[in-house]
Image 1 (tube, rainbow, N blue to C red):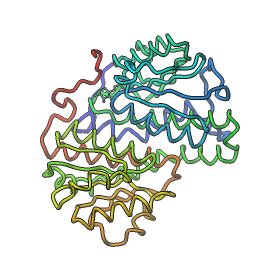
Image 2: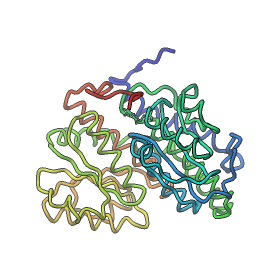
Image 3: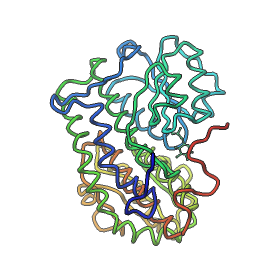
Amino acid sequence: LIVDKGNHRHFMAKEIYEQPETISHTLSHYVDMGAEKVAIRETLPFDWSDLSRLTISACGTAYFAGAVAKYWFERYARLPVDIDVASEFRYREPPLEKGGLSLFISQSGETADTLAALRYCAGQGQHVASLVNTLESTIARESSVVFPILCGPEIGVASTKALTAQLTALASLAVAAGRARGVLEAGKEQEFVRALTGLPTAVSQALATEAQIIDIAKRLSKAKDVLYLGRGPMFPIAMEGALKLKEISYIHAEGYAAGELKHGPIALVDEDMPVIVVAPSDELVDKTLSNMQEVAARGGKIILITDAEGAQTVGHGVADIIVIPHVSSFVAPILATIPVQLLAYHTAVFMGTDVDQPRNLAKSVTVE
Ligand code: G6P
């Protein structure tokens, strides 16, 4: 299989731009567009309604997909979720219920720590499900059910389209679980499915923020440290934004829960540290925006990622506002991923780093 960059300068750019298409592809597997329902094709060796807990393990960007999914499964399926990075999980020896469900998220299906976590869970008598891109991988082979993400080969070491595909599949699974557990009504399912099927268009529109993002990235490339803030499902997106920036631009970045700002990172805020706030309008946006004002009051330079409604709420105080389309808060974390990817990508381009092959990193970490 030969994969080329097309008209793009890097595989990462190509993969970022493919996302309207790859998300559609993932959706066509998980959603019955005609019936406006989620349709899981895999035969499940468990029943969603029998589960008392879902245990998720993954590494790197895949871990952040799981961290967003925790909000979805808990809110829309009332299913408690434990999530941990696989390298910690595997040695924690957590007690697990026989017949319970554990889920492993891995683009490559070969990450050593994730595989070890899977084997531990299988040994505890858990049903082992995996969400992978590479179907002929060890993790897929050793799972009792495999959910594909179908985003095509990802070449850039820093994961982009695999994350939005993982999120799309996980959102669908959360809806399926919510229906099976009797917590999500048919009307709500239809509303969520419409939100999901609207994503490819919304992602295309979010990609159109690129020109503005290039301008911001030029300034970001001069920073020594960058702080990312988010609340609720935007917290993992903030962490992902920080990870992406470190990975490819080598600028130190941290992702923090917006409400934790006052418990530490606010001490770092000065005119030299950009603070990226990921806050599309939802029921919690006012709280995040008031955290943002605390940063502004201390001279911090804010880059706000929000929608038109959120932009209107903040008024004129913020110099850089990246406006993405307004979508249902259910799918908002998927859409908010786009500007954080573009910011990291263009910052790295300004830094002149090897974007597709960043130093010291590997696409798939098959050793512990
Ligand atoms: C490496 C890659 C990341 C990836 C992580 C997990 O660190 O550089 O992009 O998110 O491994 O990989 P996996 O294949 O298990 O998703």
